[in-house]
Amino acid sequence: MLAGAAVQGPFEWITSHIQLVGWGTVLLGVYKGTKFLTKVAERLATYEKQAAEAHLATRALQADTHRLVELAEQQGRRWETYMMGKAMNHGGHVVVEDVAMHDIVSEQPDDL
Image 1 (cartoon, helix red, strand yellow):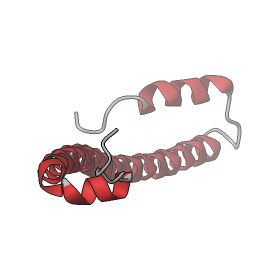
Image 2: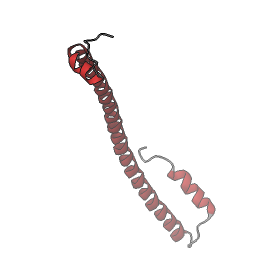
Image 3: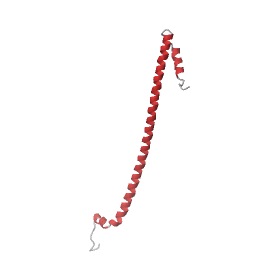
Image 4: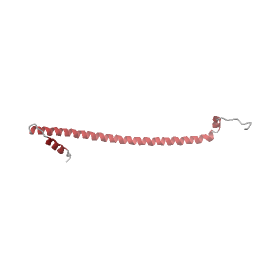
């Protein structure tokens, strides 16, 4: 050990050598921070894309559901009209064959 050398602690060593250690640490910190922010931005872009797709799918599902409800209401009105006609024309009796025949006829699309 040297007689004139003073013992330095870690804080004194860091403050005396900050020029050597500081720039590397700053550059490493900037690199890591940039890498982290890039990953976060990619994840946010992915989530935003998924949210937009889910929104479009929900809108399409709402439109499809609305159309199905309309078709069911039309089918209900047809059924009531059919059953009332059968009941009025056949003395108030509706048989199982009439119901089966109506189901077959009602499955045909309206656009034909």
